[in-house]
Image 1 (cartoon, rainbow, N blue to C red):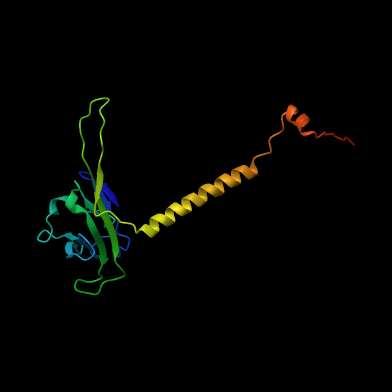
Image 2: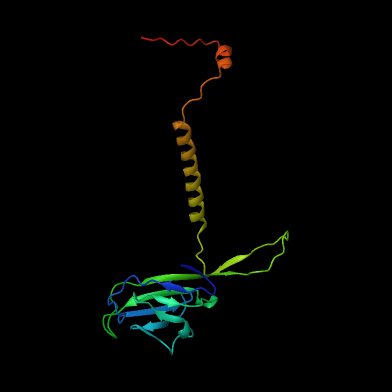
Length: 175
């Protein structure tokens, strides 16, 4: 999921057990290998654990709402379900990766050349093999589209002068 700095975002929990969110725990980590911070435990915001306590809330569907998104909010938010406090986890994790788009704004004058830079925090990095596969599939789709379009197009009629120049005489026989 992508969000801009200053926006409000809602991270959906797809594995909710109890609709009152009493089984819902949200865990945050900057990266996969980073330390986990329990932001929400059994439906309650952890005031002692999170530095963004004033910007977090739970939605009626147990989604985690983050208001006034900041660069440091980027990371992996994982929704987990527990049937009882201290009990085993029920079902699998429901992770949501949040990337925060960062851009700079300037007041511009007309006819001024400007270079705009935009970056993301914690953005998904694709391996070159995925990028090459995407390009190859795009090129193949374009070729198939062109071929199909040309095949379905009716043949062009020859200009009358071209028929004479070819030396071919056309006769239409009517029965």
